[in-house]
Length: 224
Image (cartoon, rainbow, N blue to C red; front, side):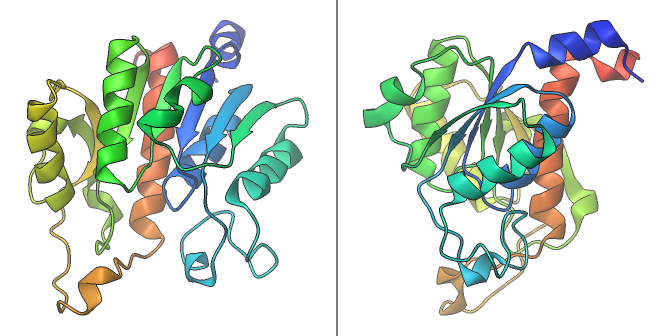
């Protein structure tokens, strides 16, 4: 479909996925099934029963296990020759040096914590590492409203608004490519807002879009 030369090019790239939840898990699997041969996995969390409705690594059998371990096992069952580096830790500017100890070509930002997103963006932009960042997908239901754009073009997204403000304060370009949903978050009571619920459709679509962005950037699928 894409030819040997393009497939070889895909296989030559290393992708880091930061956050293996509802978005990152699907991005990771899409990339590996598309031919990426080396991935770096970052997540500090364990699979929880609340993950069953949307996360690709969540099942009754994996509850309580480390997400990095479950994802690693899953990916190796798809491609036993896959090279995987995993860090079972919470991404922060204090451990950036450890995480980026090897060359990385692309990063999928599937982090929920806003301060960590800014730290990751600054590092990638400062070190010429290509990045695709996923914005808020909670309390949204329509996968048809998910698309790729620039941070500067986003609206109706509380996370995006905060990130735009912090990006300006930190001299971070608003041209960062993002996966964004134009759907307005569903209204919830103040009590329920602490638990940002979601269903599979939107985060899964966002993850697939992150994977597509990277593969398309490597070989320019649109021209094939």
